Image 1 (cartoon, rainbow, N blue to C red):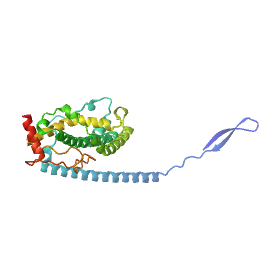
Image 2 (image 1 turned 90 degrees about the horizontal axis):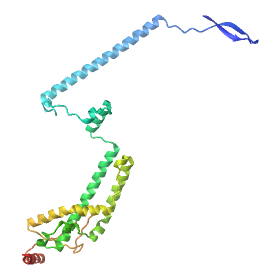
Image 3 (image 1 turned 135 degrees about the horizontal axis):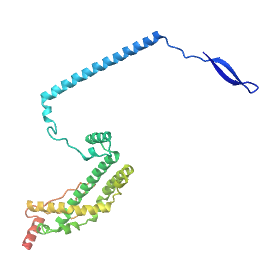
Image 4 (image 1 turned 90 degrees about the vertical axis):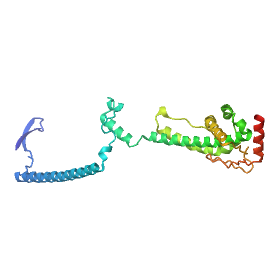
Length: 280
């Protein structure tokens, strides 16, 4: 095929010349038919394999349904015959349907964002620390009260008196555990604050506020211990401090051994009897 090409000669005038353009190579009709037949065979093979797979999956699902029906599983479906439970987010126009379904799947499988997982770990560690300190102080407070008040007077003690009890020896003895545990908790706090949203971040926990919290919360526990001793007949502990071979180890609330002397004719038995006569 010839076409005209316009060029400029040396004199600056236009001149026209013809040149041949390359025509695209044509594929023979036989080759096109062969390619079409090959594609058709490949498609039919894929359709056949997909059909076999679908038939096998359908057969397996039917067998699974039959086994479940024989075992009575369809009669134990939660919510059967009841209206479907709806939640507020399902009708929220600002949450896309696919996002709602994804969030529901995540929630039902117990997954949560990283900061929520750290929050759970932090709450567990903090609750464990506070419970251990409460148990340790409850035991120590009972020993102090039992050594200072005989049973008749112990029964009349007030919550304000219990809340005012302090023991510098116990605080110094437990300081090592308190500082170590709070250091670990504060390390979790820093990790949590690094990934948590700003409104839910937490401050560092300190020992003195935690002890004051324990002193106020242990009042009810001490009163329950006193009531239990009164119902049992009352046994006053002969412990006034870390003496007489008693090792009141805290280190996580592990209290030491306390000695009871309730034998008839013992010193504390006579003291209790004398105070009982004095009060009555």
